[in-house]
Amino acid sequence: MSMPKKKTKEKKAKRKTSASSESSEKKLKTYSLLRGMHDVLPREEKYWKNFYHTAENLAEHFQFSRIETPLLEEANLFIRSIGKGTDVVDKEMYIFEDRDGNKVALRPEMTASAARAYIMHGMWNQSQPVKLWYWGPMFRYDRPQAGRFRQFNQVGFETLGDADPVVDAELILLAHNFYKDLGLPVDIHINSIGTLEERQKYKTSLIEYYRAKRSYLCDDCKQRLSKNPLRLLDCKQERCQPIKEDAPQIIDWLEDESKNHFMKVLEYLDELGVPYVMRGTLVRGLDYYTRTVFEVYPQITGEGGSSMSVGGQQSALGGGGRYDLLVEEMGGRPTPAAGFSLGIERSVSALKQYFDANQIKPPVKKFDAFMAQLGDQAKRRSLKIINDLRLSGLKIDYNFSKNSLKSQLEAANSLQVPYAIILGQKEVQDGTIIIRDMESGVQEIIDQKKTENMLKKKLARFDDEKKR
Ligand code: HAM
Image (tube, rainbow, N blue to C red; front, side, top):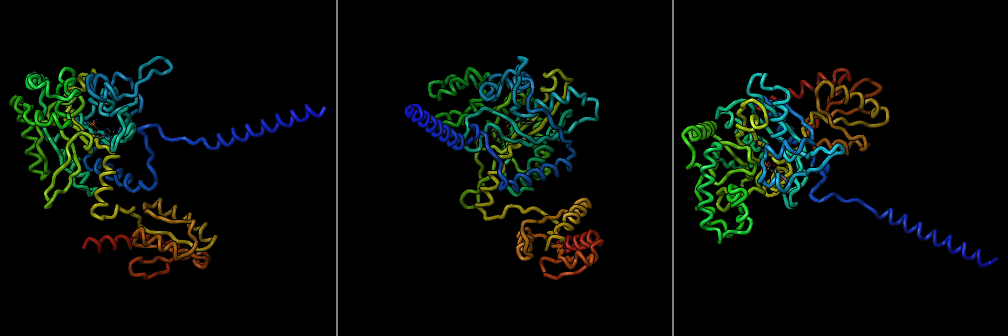
């Protein structure tokens, strides 16, 4: 009788240990990110927010309207527009079949989606050009490395329905202003890759040139020679550089019309004072481009203050160009168009590096005032005051987890807000509030009902003084 009891005890103990090791295994199980994916943490927020505000302001100034399209589209939309033989289509698309057997893809970029939307929603009926901007995640199953992710974000601007070179110049000006507003010095590289026919003739001469040097080429370039000869100009391998330098340049293959178009773009840029670097080997990695192409690179100040920029696709902060045939090729009416997109992760990283190297403080959030409160009643009341002020268009920061006035005013100080509004028990009872000038420390007690008016008046005076 005792044996079975012991066995049961042992069994129980065994069960217990295996259950506890299971639960400890369960506890230990944590999840990491998929390769090439990343989180954007709160400490990065100031850069991202600043980037978004810059985009929004410039879009408004240059009259672009925001468009949002799905992350998932028919795979063929991208295959046809970006082109077979490009890295994006051949190697980097997230393609799969949905439950109905449809071949779908996570968008690797948004120009094709914007063109699809333009056709689908009959935007050619609107006054032309139609100017669209977007912001969001893109997906490319690329080999992850610094500045290269499988999910990354872009902001983009597309002008559809106008062939005039002024459109190309306006877009390049926008890209230039973007980084100027952010405080990051950049170089804009520019080239023209002509029309399809001109490019075809150029490709023939490029193949001829490279074929004669085939045995000296890296393995990738040997493949590019037969698959996508324009990509030969992207090669980063040391051994291919001298060959690339002497390669024929596409600009010499342009007919008068394309040449004139490009000259006009450059004239506009000169007139606008937008600096650019002519780069004969710049051809871009997507097939839909015609004529003007450009890329943006972070500027690195070399010895003696001379400026140089790092070439190579991987370090490009953004790029774009004209794509006059895309809409028609996708079944729409002939619609000349141009656009560009900027990589947000790469731009944020370049900004951080630049600010660190030059000991520049990252931009601070701009608030109009900080609301400080003392005591339970004041806390309750201040939530209402903050909301009323926010509804009136003012930006108010606050921190309810700090209870002492000193720590709240320190927070206000580090935010560099011009004013703090302070509410204590006494003010709640009196129906008053204190406005404190953060620079001089002078405080004024006012009627609570006049907070909005008074603050707005003071802020207007503050802005005037700053301008002087
Ligand atoms: P793209 O040159 O392929 O052009 O991409 C634009 C920018 O997105 C790049 O310069 C880079 O900053 C960023 N980017 C691209 N791939 C990655 C990646 N794997 N990880 C991180 N960032 C990346 C386009 O996408 C075109 N749709 C631009 C355009 C608009 N052309 C005409 N309109």
